[in-house]
Length: 272
Length: 195
Image 1 (cartoon, rainbow over the protein chains, first blue to last red):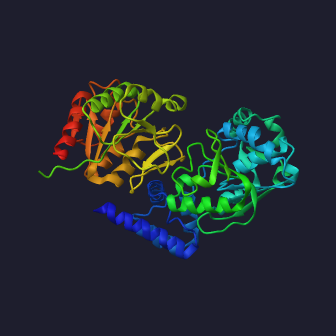
Image 2 (tube, rainbow over the protein chains, first blue to last red):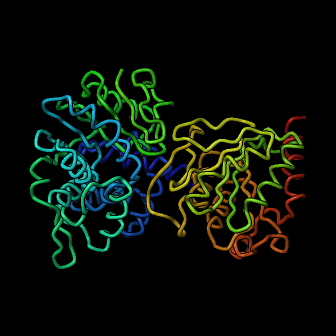
Image 3 (cartoon, rainbow over the protein chains, first blue to last red):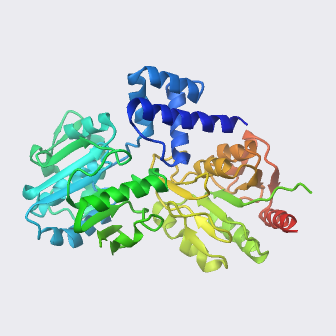
């Protein structure tokens, strides 16, 4: 059975990556991972997963190429505008009561959501006393996030989202268009810390009041979901807030009883 | 008799699909089908979010939007959520993904079928119905390669024949059937197993 061989190869590849590079994909959802490895095989011109494994083990640059397939850099600013509207209306008023704020955007990819969060806080007058920690495992994504430059072709979509999210200003106030990129305001960047952090292998680094982790947990299996939720639970202050992706829930995790639902449709939960 | 015990039916449809699915599911319900039914129906995102409701209003069996990590349960009809790919993991639970569209579609029928082929192997029935694109044919072929049973709606009956024809061009499915006969076959296969 060729498919059985491929499953063995896939497990060995993930084990090899973990042993050599400390990146742990062993508890990711397999259906999607399997497909992304197949894409990588075609693009990197490997005949089998075993061949890919050999390349990755002997060539760190080859691993960095593969990592771009294993992580999912799909993001946009103010994605799911209703989520940000929900935060603005129902979470921000409660965050106002804290003298200083720490916010964690977990799995930030190329940073779109972290900048969106900074804009939201700026408009609500909270950015000056906030620090947003935006973490990811992909160094290339983090590098792009730190630059804060996004293709102009995406700006119209971002602007639509911003308006639908209840934006209180003009979106173009937040960036400078140059060549074919939009460079986001340096004063937003001052409140953003982009850092390498793995929900699979690292531990909690700060006490936070709000954690936003959207469309990241869907790529994990149940065990790894529970590990990540455990980190969030530990990091959040008493009655802290957790925002998930529009189709994510705590229903099938071990943490369903440790959070209450604040906004059902917008997927905002509150630590009990 | 060494008939295979089927454990799930995955279905894909696009243009004209809602009516086709309603007809097929109605017939399966009347026949007492207990297999889980898992469907991707291409629709604009707004309409997609109402699909479960539309189907639930007209069918006896419970209809749910498949949730991430939910286990696949018998007798339930699952539909894919708008804007996400739907897959089935080897432990027969659902997983969602917000990766880029495949065949211009998210959810993509190919992704559901390919993952289901992996999870269920020969215990799977895959059915591809009416539609105006080619999503699903590669996934249906993979179901065949993993020993599952493949059904394609008779192109002459399909509201739009493109999707069934794309599958027929790609490989030879086990059966090309009208929806009425497709329902009958599924019910018969389930009954043979129950005996």
